[in-house]
Length: 247
Image (cartoon, rainbow, N blue to C red):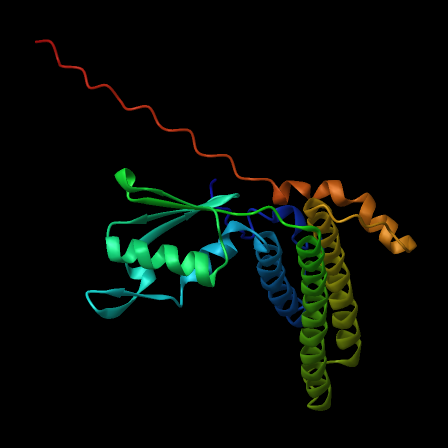
């Protein structure tokens, strides 16, 4: 499975755009909101994914020639939707890895292929409680993003207030900036909610809209479901056949 890279280009459908040029304070705010939105999408996409499991060994150590060594210095890990494939060329590392995976990480389905120096860790299917926990964590992440936008808004508001007091910002301009920022917040919060609902539904959690605003959010889920689809693998390039020149 090809790893997704979230950036402005990939998420261009969700980026805030306006025909009128933003004022400097609003433009600065939008840039910060945009960066945090991209990070938010990356986080909720990877919640419960193989990428999270891939990071679980980062602090682990194994005994190699009677010395503690960082496990990650000796293995190569590839994450898939349903498993990790780990290459280990050292028998001591392999034995330590299997022990850590089973006893500390709690994975029982561990398969070893000595001929390929390969250990496969198969993920169990999530049970109902795990689905609920992950769905709740996704919702909490959306709330956190919303709080972040409001926090940045407060910082910008303080800057505007200071500018008015020092008389290098007109009151009328500050009002316009505030309105622009409100539109930016509405844009990114709306998409953050749509993406959150899409993620929760993708997990298999049964949820229904409870308010008119929820109904609007749910009606737009189809706009974002592609974000959670797996990236297709690149087609292997055909090797060019060199032809001998006939003299």
